[in-house]
Image (tube, rainbow, N blue to C red; front, side, top):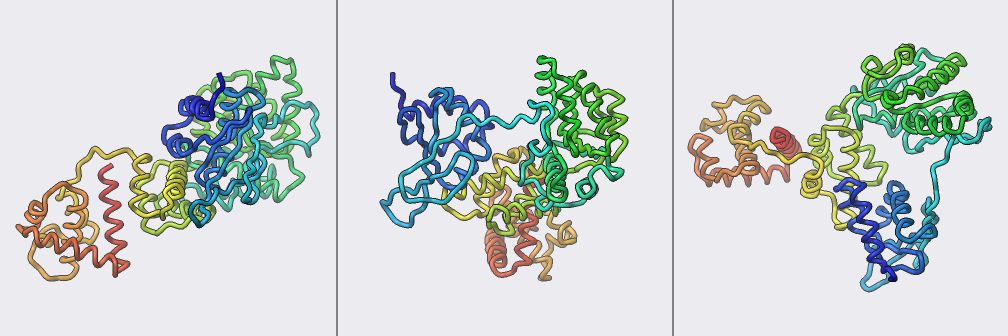
Length: 477
């Protein structure tokens, strides 16, 4: 039975939805539409150039493998990119590009084949490989310029910069960077690698995850080629090993790394390691390795503070050519406090939703997208909680907030409190008024309208209200 494009794509999605996270699936795969199947070439339609580039960068391997499973090893994938052509009834603009790069748009109907077999280069397979041929396995986007410095990472970043300038010639050898998931460890150590390549182009740099290191060691063990494996690593000038905590389940791999570590360190070569915890807490790692990890500097990455999160968002926006109002940026930075990865994920989802819906990113869209990143609140905010929060913010006593006074600062604080109470609680206007010394519902209506008017005309007043809104939202989480 001949398969249709819809059937092939549905079968691919059945596999993909079990692999990627639900929100990523909703954002990046649901909008795709199958538009044609000719021989073993599936054509899919994506909403924008941004979607195409994101899929190519993050999901090309997954798409290739699922399509190959459906159509066989000769399967090809073609993209049809929907563009706003500025008129009604015009054919969509498509793109003619190779599988791993981006060219210019054309108005013809030519699409491009996706290269199915594109395995990651294996840096271990050729014993005695010439230095110039070793692929450093670095992401060029991970640079020091793109890594925002703050109190949470200052020591680690500056130590990394020093190591990159003088690899193997400082007291920071090895440099061990540790911290939680999404705190920027991989970015920082790859930035070191990229900076070394820029400043010292003749240095041989290699970034490798400990998981890949272990897997390659096992493969070489099966082939009785452990000496070749160790010899390869002894060619490296700057070795960056990510997530060394995974060594706890690989005793023999630790033995190999011990030999590699000793050779590189004694030869004045640089080692950079990452872990999810400090070396002293790496249970299951050989003590002789841990003692060597402590020879250099251990620097931690902590959770970014509010100001650093603001700067991270602004830098990501500039890099992506994205524009957002300051209130949306503050809203994201205030509400996403877990790690940088979720902060970036929220930004990408906002950009995707904006691209799909063809609308600007505003606070309403940000709130809708953020529901997928921040747990829904189960804590109910009361009027009393808001009253005390506003009193603390403006340094006004609770009693004065309820008094009948015409002092401007007291009146505005009371009006803002009523506005927030109407926004964040389920209380009626009458009930809100009763919490302010028995005022009636018309006073509440007037106060809310006054706050809205002042937010349109007074930027400082608007910032105060926005910050209080964010404090109330945070208290509800």
